[in-house]
Image: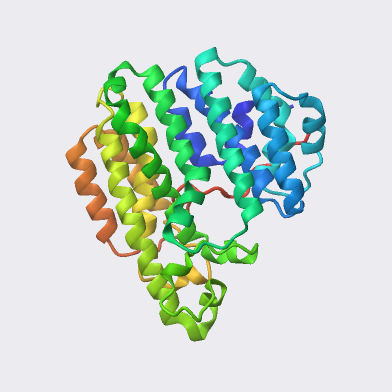
Length: 348
């Protein structure tokens, strides 16, 4: 039986690094939250199930979390997940994740059950609705369900455990949602080619310069100019959300350096990944990534200098303006809902 830590590392080495630096009791609480959301992601994103079955299972997952349904039937069903993906790996070990939820204190447990349940309900709603986004508000609504609610979850945990953040809760909550939308917008840009392959293109029709072009046609060579115009709109949108994410970090007192660092690393990775993607037609063909050297350099600087709000602003401008680098193999970029291939852990 895999442990929570093994599942965390196997499903996302990037998040494992960030979570490992958190103080107690945030570390186990956010570990469990992350893994619960990976199960929800599997139920929404997998290619094994029909949409109606996804909706039904997301409903069962919410009821199990709330204690309104027996766990074992769903646990057995999730053990049948066949995909070789991080989400499916965590889903096959849902019994371990639910046991981790049981071990949390009541306040944190209540937050996780409520927020993961809300996100799962939103995923079910969008699975029923389908992948057509007419307006930017449609895209924001979807991203709120899969990422904005995660910002709310983390903010509730921070204000529960960090007394110095409680007076700023009213300001942190909306900024936490914006932080989630920032990372997810960068994910949309990075995953354009991959999401198209599974039938989803996260481009609002309102972003298309020619109403006669369908979003899926942006990948055709003859529509390159239209695709680059859409990319520019998405990059501008990401920039706005990232500004709110920086404001979020500024509201976390510097004495909580490890929590600031947990938030800061994905922000910096997103800023740099966005810079690499800006006006880059390669995003239509493959995933744009930072180099390993860049990841290491960003992490090292953030550890030593991330306590300074002024440094964060200056460094973000530097990352956003520096030209892309090539040095060896690719590295992980901004946090994505489908991270690098996991190490093997046997199913229960």
